[in-house]
Length: 447
Image (cartoon, rainbow, N blue to C red; front, top):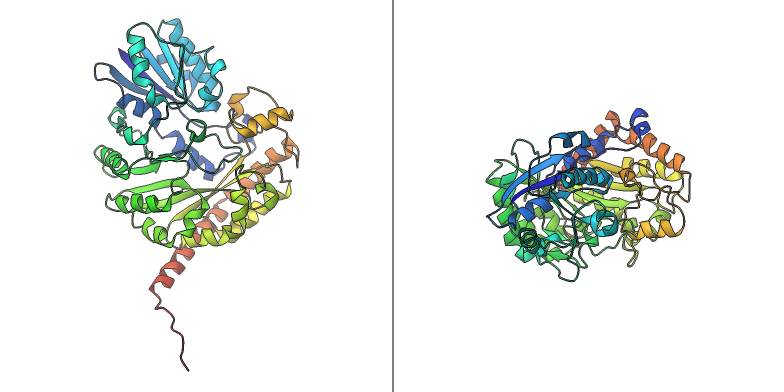
């Protein structure tokens, strides 16, 4: 079979007024471009699990207008974010009218399987790796099922193949993703990540991670690697093993983790030398009221809030930039949150800042709660799940106040002056850290 792998790419706000009113948000645009330029690791992994008798091609669509020249295929597998799922459905319908079988999977499809079945011939629920080979065989034999449910047959990352990076146009990407673990132990109410696909936090063997890094290096002479993890450094012993192995690879990399990375001095000492340029950390809010209840298991983030400032300083003192992420519109926060975030950022100087609005993605506890409370502005408006469009009624302000506050705060945080101050603040912290590391240990004076 000729199999076309199609990734819906690109991030943009749905409301055009957000752009007209100054929604350039350089900090997020920079991050958004990076995300948009990342290839679909899930499709490349499925490609590696595809028998050699099949022909594979990888494609990306950032706008539905680009669907006019869809590749020819016998089977099409489509990957998409929630915000683009309606365009992905349109692509699927175009293929179905041609008589081409379509497959869709991922977070949104797992959360909304009945909806997806109206648009795709075949859907995959849960982790696709475990069912993909059987699905292909069934399609070949003319006995394909409408639904392949991988829940209950958990996929072991020790069995993960090296993704088919060779299918990519090497000139098209400025960074490449490698996954080192899947899931996260902190069950945040709003989180629409791999915790919706896997019931537990699991880690890929370090040797396999390095094998994938080397596969990337074989294609890109100086790659920038992004670990496609929800939380890379949960297990500190394993983290030190991974970071130690990365030190010998000579690549720069970026990852997401939680604030506890600052608790491990040995790990912090290793990071920059191992090529870690930046860590993205979801602080969510500098407000106790905002954080209360965000993490559903034991309010872990609320328990850490008093240490946020020192943790940022400690990480950046080791030459690793922090991308501090905040969610605006949490239930405990009112209009005062915009000034609180700005003051926190000015005080702590994280190298990068990311601000978004609370977004109820399908399948998350947040979506279910807001739906039960009658607070969703429009059910099924997936195209507005962009992290910038307001899709619910906040408790501490109006939807309009939240939208305006996001824009105004963004214009201040991402101004040239503010960005320059943060970058200087990072360099000052790093310089102070190097100076402290060189200083001789103080000795008690014996009288």
